[in-house]
Amino acid sequence: MLHDVILEGHGARLVPLDLPHAEALAAFVDARVWAGMSSALPVGVDAWRAEIEGARAAPGRLAFAALDAATGEVRGSTSFYDRDLRVPRVEIGHTFFAPRWWGTSNNPACKLLMLEHAFDVWGCARVALRADTRNTRSVAAITRLGAVPEGVLRNHRLAPDGSRGDTAYFSILPGEWPAVRAGLRARLGAA
Image: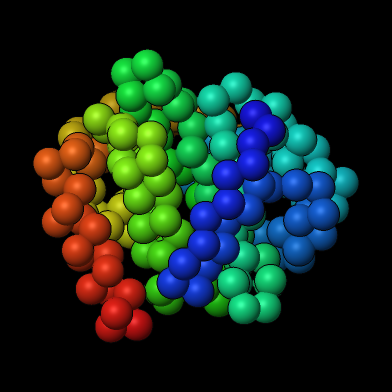
């Protein structure tokens, strides 16, 4: 869905994902980066434009381009999705970053910004994150955030190659948020 949410801090800037980001995403997204996604790898700028248009058209999804706050370099993308402010709850996902940003402060910074918005602005009672269990890098990153494992949905995902996969679910609730926030801030302070 179209939105105007911009989040910035800790060297990262999240802006609404838009067509001008297609060229930068096409330049670094490959099979390693796209691992665990349930859609086919977009190849080329035109495919990325279509991917961005799909993300922007999805109801309840606020897709962001993750930028370097100082240089404007596109680091990747992440989204809020399945947002239901009546409950209120949201999921964070559709996340991928250029390999040069793996293992840096980028993911903790982006997730801190998004979690602050979800809990402190929207007043969410639940923020969920999930990953294909085969995507051990993503599962480890979610675990390092401090999200609580909830379980595994078996045979829940269909990969582009037709294989079935399991989905590991995690969540953060309001009572857990202060400790998660402190942990992320400590990680960012050490970076």
